[in-house]
Structure formats: C-alpha cells, structure tokens
Image (cartoon, helix red, strand yellow):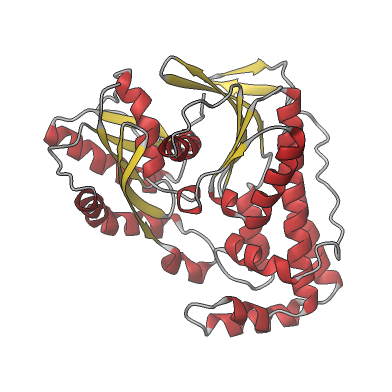
Length: 384
C-alpha cells in the first residue's frame, strides 16, 4: 500500500485537535487543546464558547502538529476533518479551516465520521503494535459523553462498513456520568472524577434497578425512509438511573452537604483526589461507587449479550468512557470468560483526538473517496 501522511483535524465538541498519521498505522504527532477550564464554571459544554475557543486554537494546534511530525503543509498527502456528528458550530470551524488548507495547497480533502474515528483509534494502535490480523466479525461499542452505540463492523477490501445494532434512547453514558457528578457537587467533567472516587466507596450500598426499555425500537431511519429491521437490538437508557440518583439525594436529604462540597471545590483551582475525598462523606462515596457499578454492569452486560447474539470474534470498546478504569477491568475479565478478545485505545486516544480522524481517513484515501468543497457539517451524521 502507498505511504501517505495525512493531517487530521477534529473539532466536533470541546477539544481542538490536530495530528499527523502515516498510512493509517503510525502515529507521528498528536496535539489536543482542551477547553475544560472554559466550560468548567457552567458544568458542561457551552456550544457558543466551544466554537469561539476552536477559532482561537485551530491555527496554533495545526502548526504544532506539523512541527512535531517534522512535516510541512506541502509534504502532506491529504487533509482529513471531522464532518459530524457533533456541535454544528464547532464542526464548522474545523471544516472551514480544512477546506481552506486543501484549496490553498491543492491537496485531497477527506470527510470523516467522528464515530468511525473512535473505532479506528483502536485499529491505529493495534497496527502500531504489529497486530494486523483481527478476527471478524467485529463488534464496536462507542461510548462517550455524546454517544453510546453498538456497531457490527465488517471490512470490504480496504473499506469498512458498519451496522448499528444498539444505541441509547436518551442520555449517553458519559452524559449520565457528567450530570450525576454535577448533581452531587463534584464539578465538571464528571466521568474522570467519579472513576477516581468510586474505589473509595461501597459499590453495593445503593441498589439501582437495571434500565427497563419497554418498547423495542424496531424501526430505524435511512435517509428519509423508516425501514423495518429484523436483527435484535441492544439499546441503552440512562435517564432512569440519573433520576434515581436525584431521588436518592432528595430522600436522604443530601442537598446541604452537596452545596458545601460544591463551594469547597470551587475555591480550589485544580482539585486533586485528596480534595475530592476531603469534601465527600461516606454516603456520597457509596453513592458514587454504586452508580458507577450500575453503569458498568449495564454497558458490559448489553454489549456481551450483543456479542453472543451476533457471534462476534472481536470486541472494540472506544470513546471517552472507555478510559474508565472499572469499565476496562470488567470488560477484560468478562470478555475473557466469554472467549472474546477485547481491545481498547490508550487513554490518550479514548477521548476526542485528531489521530483517529487521520487514521480513519486512510482507507478513503486509498479509495480516492475525497470530499467535494461544498460539503458541510452534519451534526447528526449517521455511521454506516
């Protein structure tokens, strides 16, 4: 296969990222500018602020990625950018800049689905390790702050195709982590904080019932048409557990303690684990541990049920929530019991990054599947 240096650009949410990847299998540089400090006071991502921060960061981030890769604009073979899904305004910043570069440099432009990027983050790192012989079919769980999807992935020549066999009906898993952390005064982003605090609590202290999805989602949209699907679905739902945590807080009169904790942590510029522990009583730690355990059991249980039903040979777990320590340990343990190898990206490539976009672009580069200059952002872009 021809060698190709591809510049990836990612701006779908609150990370401005650029990376250079060679031929979809060698990470040359990877630069991410985080916006956590910007959004932290609001307890979540503010779309207008995200777009503004992308505008500020995109040029220096791309320049740094090229410098670290010892590449120039002219030495690149193609430019890849996230088309969607994501925040429309944020996506447009990356797309506009990628279009300008491609036009000025007369380089091919490749539009990439953000979700496919997360799947290729796993492939990129496995290929770097020399693992080129993955067994098919592959089931990929993409789980993050904005997405919780299950895809059956197949390879056709150099291209990949995807069939969605499950998705969240309401909140994404990462969104539930963030909202629960905000509810109990732990701040933003909530997922990493909960992951660090959970080992200090009793995960069996609070019983959360599993999500009950009463009506099966038997129809899906393809373009303008709704079509019947025959394959069993493995959907998720996390609005119920979020409400259960709220109810627990109210019944156990935890509001006063939450307000004190929120104020104490707000006065610390960058709280450490000991700061969170000092501000959290036993009841809070038990609640956090029990919540995380329920989330992990649901994600692992439904994913492995789908793996059995579809007789998959390999499992990918990727996206921001794939960095969760308990999720990784549980998947590794139960995947081994099922006889299904489970692959994760490194924690650096679990969260949003541009290396995954450049890696996912390489099969499109080989197929000469280039984007027209009039393409635009698609906030709800589906992966197929």
